[in-house]
Length: 302
Picture (cartoon, rainbow, N blue to C red):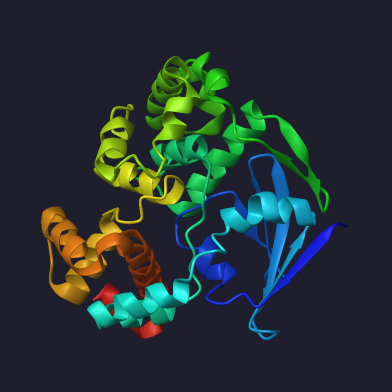
């Protein structure tokens, strides 16, 4: 199998990257590696932090694939060590969150796939989001290939979904989100995918991109900020969901979305979205530990 090995990778952890709620088509293997698909590219990623400052092994990948796609997709050109130092210097509280998810990197994902994925994320939890997306791809995507005996499918094109009705998605079990998905696909098809793509250009402000993205059915402020952050490079965006409300209340005593957004803008600045990912991962890890603690479970029953 084709394989690329890159050494000297720092501030990188596959569990942190793929378990922080930013991507839904990657699955952990028993050996700790992750297998998944981005576009039409299928890969297995394995990371050894003990060799040469960190060794990343990409299977089913050529040198050309790595340099032309995966290096950018994994955001390997960004100095996350410097970002973490800057954030911790501004706010000592976030240092604890950074310590919990020190290997997080923000993936540079496809804009159309991210738009639909986060529409499906509304009032949903990660395992179910993944099932919904996989069902959608298996039914309406194209076969992209196999890896270790598993078949992978592309994400359906806007034009494919635009021709459907919400009831055509019944087997995907999307619930009320089906009508939003179809409405969004029709708007993207009508506007042209190029318009969505241009929202990630450096000369397009987060405010302009936010205005356009919120014009899609079912896209509110939280979903819009996720789309801007995870696919358009707007790293000052700070999505606020129930998890973030919890962590910002627990750590800073903030309650309203406006209070949280204003605080994030003042404190984290242009790296607000990256700070959000450290905080999101941190609160989920705390919640998991508490759920696994028998004493905590007993206290919850009282």
